[in-house]
Amino acid sequence: MVMNLRKIIQRYKLKNKKDEKMKKVYFKTFGCRTNQFDTQVMMSKLKDFELTQDETEADVIMVNSCTVTNGADSSVRSYINGREKKNPNAKVILAGCGSHSKGESLFEDKKVFGVIGHSEKEKINEILKYEEPFYQIGDLKHIDSTIVEEFVGKSRAFIKIQEGCDFRCSYCIIPSVRGDARSHNEEDILTQIQKLAANGFGEFILTGTNVGSYGSKEGSSMAKLLKRMSMIRGVRRIRIGSLEPIQIDDEFKELLSEPWMARHLHIALQHTSDKMLKIMNRRNDFKTDFDLLHEIADKGYGIGTDYIVGHPGEDETEWKEAIERVKTLPLTHVHAFSYSKRDNTASATMKPEIRGNIAKERLRELTALVKTKNRDFRLANNQNLEVLIEQGRDGIYNGYDQYFNKIEVQSKEDIVSNWILVDEAEVDGDKNVAVY
Ligand code: SF4
Image (cartoon, rainbow, N blue to C red; front, side, top):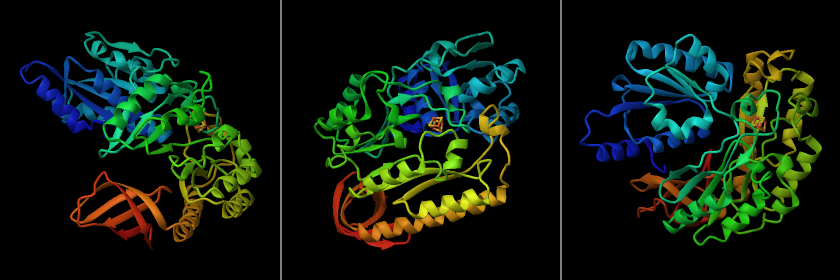
């Protein structure tokens, strides 16, 4: 990680060693990677406080909340209720997506001392000095000046390049708690990448809420950013967190044969039944998805997707059609989820709802199917694997190849953070194995 929590705390301790009176702040983060990035933004802005990993000794507990489902809301609420026993004197401050959905009621019920919205994160050092309760929700147009990076080992970095989403998928609360899509300044992103590449980072993973919308309002595009990134000395491989099918245009497709493009794309389909895609208010349809995925797979790519099963309306007929269609797609990876209700979204009131056990069974069927596809793909693509080793010790190391398949490598040398070329790997269960 760029700076994992332990390192950040150590740095603060060293810096502030002499100041015994500094108030201690504990961060509790819920939810996705974006929230984890936001916690890092807040931590990086704390100048007059000390970070702690022990919530019982904290003067302030920052709850960076998630509100993606009703279940996520309950987890945040029960954490806030539970901490009263653990540390009744700490001031609790709510941040994150839950501030925008549940902040007002938690504040009115005096469950939290303060509430801050996404746009207020970077002012945290001043906000934490407030003596009176506060509700500072800000706006949903702001984009942080801090571009967060997260490091895996010493050679792979995640870079958050945009925030928010203009899509309005029926099941999703994100646009109303994170706002519309907006992008980080391109020059700032490139400067950051330049610095990291000069320090030995070779692989970059671009992330955000709706990454593929990068630059659409700023006169740029994902393809333009990629081209500029690729010209930076030291940039060896670029991955993109996730793309929507309609964001893959001709300009982007032209880059598919570039050597620095990882041979894996994550394309969020969410479903393969057109009726379901309509209900979900998605912008893709199966026929176009089918053509697109085959076009990309034909260029030697592994393809992953997100898929929601058990959304209201997914009756037996729709599911049968959907799973038959998945069989025809060149998928190699899937992030499959069972639908989970989120109040204040269009899907929350839709009927008929799908019983949990049925959704679970569909999830199992889908993941098993894609697992088989992944294995077939690995059997056909087990040679000339370009692997970045992320971790390991005592002769066993792990990394990912260009197709985003996991590989375990036996080596007598310490090869952590090295790029290695595997002539031929053996397919073993869920991963590949090789000797180097
Ligand atoms: S694309 Fe749809 S699912 Fe993804 S963040 Fe936007 S609204 Fe939510």
